[in-house]
Amino acid sequence: MNELTSPTLSHLDQPESVAENRGNPLRGWENENHISSTQYQKALAQYESTRQAVLAALSDDPTVGRMTEIGREYGEAFNILEEEDPFIDTTDREDLFDALDHILDEAEAELSLDLDWARESVIEGAESVRDW
Image (cartoon, rainbow, N blue to C red; front, side, top):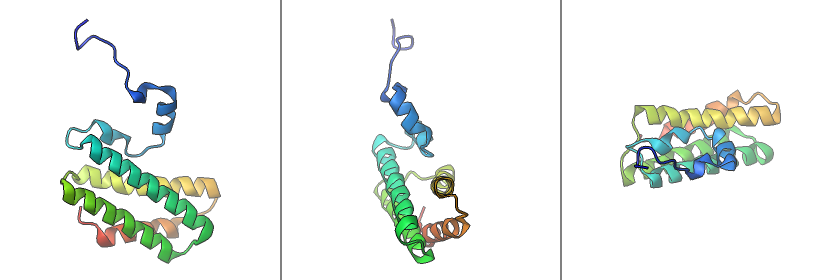
């Protein structure tokens, strides 16, 4: 078999990886030519960290101030990634804000609450500091 016809399996083809990746709003970044594997992994880690922070804050400290702070932390983390090696284009910017929406959609479903105030606060925080 040559390279083009030989079957290959990546870790993403495994059933557990497919299930984990289904809820990943940045999954499209993994195969983008302008985004390195390291950038993708760091972005995914930041997404997951932000997700955990939002869910924890909504359980422990559900305030506008805390949600805005989480948004700022998210924006600043991607500022650092962008400074290291610029890669975030217009579509990627949209993906990053869609990822925040995804986090709040998930939280709304899990908590059965209307979290428009939290969504607005997180996005406002990210917008206030982002350089991308």
